[in-house]
Image 1 (cartoon, rainbow, N blue to C red):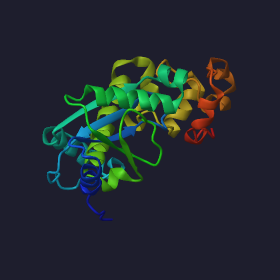
Image 2 (image 1 turned 45 degrees about the vertical axis):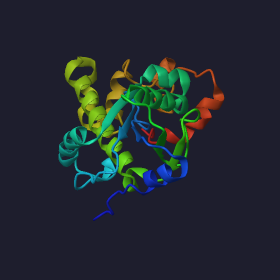
Image 3 (image 1 turned 120 degrees about the vertical axis):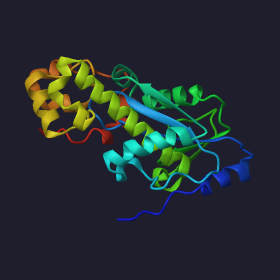
Image 4 (image 1 turned 30 degrees about the vertical axis):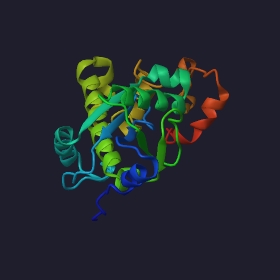
Length: 236
């Protein structure tokens, strides 16, 4: 199914209405995973025509996505990644962990952006950043789509490396599922329990009586409530 290519419409609007000269597109990957970090990419693209086929990373085949990410890393003006670890997610909750990862990515850019286009409807970044949220921005905005592809490919590679380098991770199939719930992942959790790379405050542990004692209780009930909609799929 063909998709409309992303444009610079939102970036042009920000430049015209706010005077922003440098605009970064920001997208995350790993929000709904049970293991691994949440990863955010910030990408600055200017107003140049992007490589063909650019769209939301989830709509691109893994092979083409990897090829496109390599093209994008050379094409973008600049980009940077930020991560929040499973421990930070457990301690802070997902909303605050997303902000932490996004700030790390933005701070790692060689030049601080004047404005940020953030994928989705919720501004988890906030002040002092000047943010424009765009629903499905990873499909409609060039910079956000570029960030989406780079973030997805980089995080998938990180999870595959965990599977390859650590024997305790091999049974979970991280190279295929990137830490998201899958039949292989669920079966391994039942048999072996979570690893240090799993998020231990999440509700999937409620369905695993033999491992429930490992669950971490977050200090802030409010923070836990904010992400209660993002932990689906724990029906073992």
